[in-house]
Amino acid sequence: MPLFPSVTSLQQLAATPVAGFALQNGTPTILTWAVPNDGLLHRVLVISTMDVTSTETGGGVVVNVTLPDGTTGQPTLYSSGKSAGMVNANYVACQVKAGSTVTVAQASALTGGASTVWAEIWGA
Image (cartoon, rainbow, N blue to C red):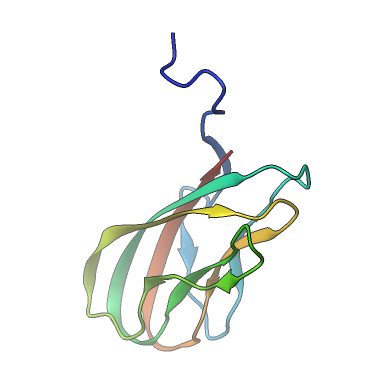
């Protein structure tokens, strides 16, 4: 029997393909989740890993969220300008507002180097 039977388990809601997402010379959205508009408190967990194959210029990655009180935030998954190699796995976890949208996106264009990001959005 679950410890908190009324709490919904996290479910995978979005994921990059197995090949990952190659960062671009732009600021594209990598993943997105439309939070149900049911008036309830929701939770989100973004898990990610990055492989920098050639030292970056730019290439920052963020999570865009709206907190339950309507405050918007942009926690950083990866800052710009990483050196070549595996970047430690990173995550963002928080409560989000019903009816909002959670996105994982590039915050700065990758103007030099090459990087691949693998990410998943889990939520309830």
